[in-house]
Image (tube, rainbow, N blue to C red):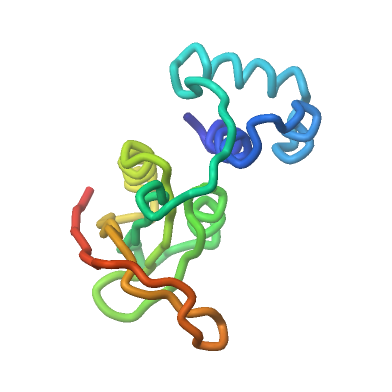
Amino acid sequence: MDNVDRQLVALLETNARMPATELAKRAGLARSTIHERISRLERKGIILGYSAIVRKTDDTENTRALIYLNTTQKRSSHLLNVLESFPEVRSCFSTSGTCDLVCWAEFSHLEDLDALLDEIALLPSVERVESSVMLASKFEKDSIGATVRNASTLAVVGGQN
């Protein structure tokens, strides 16, 4: 899967009934190209079917992860543009400390995280990739500091690629 395929999958996960003309407009491609790509994704078993979106409960939340990147001294805006193009990557921060960038990402399946880590590791200015999967949230706050959600446990499991 390339970036365009990931974008199509993310759009279809948001709205499986989105018309091909709208998908084409958002992806910047011809409608016929969208049909060809979707057919290929279906044949490859990446798109297994289409279903109704049901309200999420605590046990059906997406998997969230932090991705830690060590980059070369010549980190370019190209790297940030590539990271921004991944629909799973929700935000990216430059940091002080042991890594140069930390990205927050969200996935439906752990296999998607694994594939993204492999792809990021191949980028020219990336020297090292590590990740931590967020298992549950203790609390979250909105922009004014009010707690908006509680959960029962929090643990972070590290992995590296």
